[in-house]
Length: 466
Image (tube, rainbow, N blue to C red; front, side, top):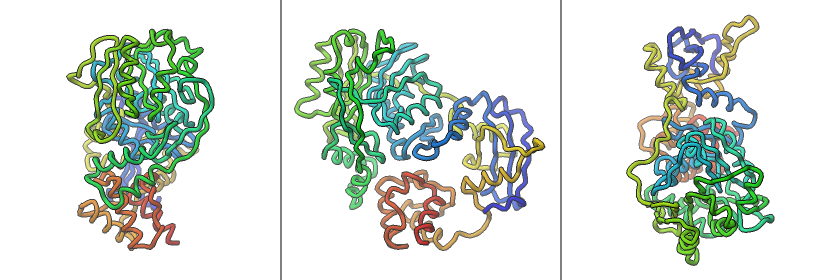
């Protein structure tokens, strides 16, 4: 535990140009940088970080959902880190949606069918100024993530809870908590093959642990939900036009299209959708869209060429490859970016790593209005900071495993498995090596989805060893 009496607290007195309202520098008296931290209240220049500090204090946010920065310019609430990385790559880095002529005008109306945690909705809101977005999602836990991500990025999102199909009714979908992007009405064995192909492509090649990882990710839960046609789902919302209809519903896309009546089709300007080519589904979807007056382009994700998955881009106008992706980036929109900006302005903070910065809605104060040093120490302790000293025997053995698997010379307690180059396959190998080193079942296979920092993993091993 951190020794509160050994902490020094210094008020930051520097012109930060609106980056923060106030802040303090907290150091251990020995000067050990591992416990040095800066606690600051974000200012008006960093509105996303400011909103994040408030949202993270809400009950339940740090339970099923957590906040993660997959990029210097993006924060997102998510169920697990692998999921957030996948969404960042697909939606933001690879720009799977706003391409091939599909664009957003100012003040667009967008319908996001199969919203998942709201990654695409965030993209549409950042690109389309003044966007009005309808996010359709049947899983309650994912609806909560959509809500938080909309609030985080100050985007106008209406959440429509439920599934969309070709008729009103009730159904049961398969929800994969550890791989939510593949949840859907028509879960089957092909899900395993698609996921296996994707993981093998990103983690190098097939390995003995790949089947085990796929099985772990595709442990499903049944979720009962209502089904409506798209028109029924939008009733009462005064939708006179849809600038973009995005559909990603894991093999149920045909039912969604067939549930759209002629009147609603006339109000849809663009469609981008994922299609599984089951029994000629891609050709059938192209014919339907062309019959409705759209020009259609077929595209594929290079990582999924051996699967049945295709992307369709349809517009009431020409479709063609675009020269550049739309700009969704905003300055100072992550804690990491804000911490870097603060370090650049204050030379005395240059020796403090970015990950040692903490952003809070308000600095803790005692009854006299003074900074509460004990409360600051508790914050440091809760974030996993450690005092100078050597690792325990458990930590040393775990560190050796990480160094060998990740090909690094050393590991700090604050290091993250994935930041050091860890992948899904390497996580399987790590669990197997931990079993050999400490005994079976001391580390759950899904631990890295809950917490992937070294100190978090070590704490789980220590707890299970008794």
